[in-house]
Amino acid sequence: MQTVTTHTGKIYVDVEKRLEFLTVGDYGKENNIKADFLGLHTEINGVKHKEVDLTKKWVATISTQKGCPMKCQFCDCPKYGFFGNASIEELTYEIETILKNETVNHTDRFNVHFARMGEPTFNPNVLTFAKDILRNLTNKYICAKTIHPVVSTMLPKSNKNLKQFILDWCQIKNIDYNGEAGLQFSINSTDNEQRNKQFNDRSLSLEEISELSKELPEPKGRKYTLNFAVTKDTILDADRLTALFDPQKFIVKITPIHETNSAIQNGFDVTTSYDDYDVYREFEQPLVKKGWDVIVFVPSHEEDSDRITCGNALIAYK
Image 1 (cartoon, helix red, strand yellow):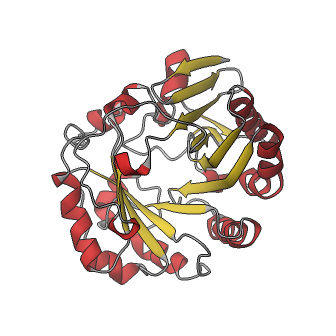
Image 2 (cartoon, rainbow, N blue to C red):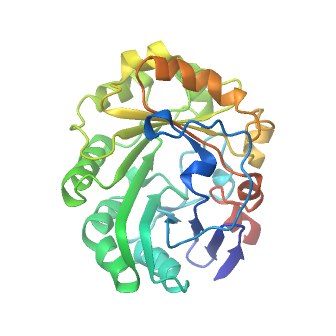
C-alpha cells in the first residue's frame, strides 16, 4: 500500500488489489461554490488553498471498479486498463482504510462518493454496500452527524441493468437514507455529437437519459444532479436542457474539466477554467433565468497538481 499525501488529504494506492481511493477535507462552500439558491452569490475567480478541517466535512471517494471500461476522452483512467469490479470486501476495505488512518473521531458530514475509478452502475455490490454496510462501518470508527453516499454515473448504454440500478439507488436515497444521499448524471453537453466525442460513444443519448429521468421517483431531500464538466467550448443550451429535464427534480452542477493528460492530448481547453469566472457565467446565468438551481464548483490548482483525478496515482506506480 502506498499513501500519497495531498494538499487536502491522502490518496491510497493498492497496486496488488488494483485500487486507489481518496480522502480529502473541504475548503468550505463559501470558498469554492457559487449557488444563488443557497445564498452563495460570490463569483469564484480562483480558489486559494487553505487548511481543511475533517471535523466539518470529510469526503471519501472510492473506486467501484479496478480501472474503468468507459474510455472517456477527458480521463486518464483508461490508460491503466480494466480489471473488473470491486467486491463488497474491497469496498469495505477502502472505507475502513480511510477511516482508521486519521486521528479524527467525529465529523459533521461524511460524504462517500462512488466516483473514483470505474462506472458504479456496472457493480451491484455498490447497492448492497451502501444499504447494508456503510453506516455501521462508519459508526465503528467515527461519530458522523450525517452520512451521505453519492453515485455518479456516466450512463453507459452497454449496461442492460442501468435503469434498475438507478431505480434501486433512488430507493436507497429516498427510503434507506431518508433523502440524505445523492445521484449525479454526467451530462457535460446538451449536444449529442459533443457528448459522444467526450464519452467515446459509450453513454446514452440525451433523449434516452431524459426518458429515464421521467421514471425516477420524486427526490426526497436534495434533488438529483445533472453534472456539466465544462470548458469555454462546451455547448450548454438552457432551452434544450429545460425541454429534456425537470428543474423541479434536478439541479445543475457546473465544474471545470480537470487538467488531465488525456484532456490536454485530446484538445480540451483546460488552461483558464480555474481562474476566470467568465467561463462559468455564460453557462450559469441562462439556466438561472430558466428557473434552475445551479451550483458552480471550482477546485484549486493544488487539487489538480495532487493527482486527484481517476487512475493517476495507480498509473504512477504501475
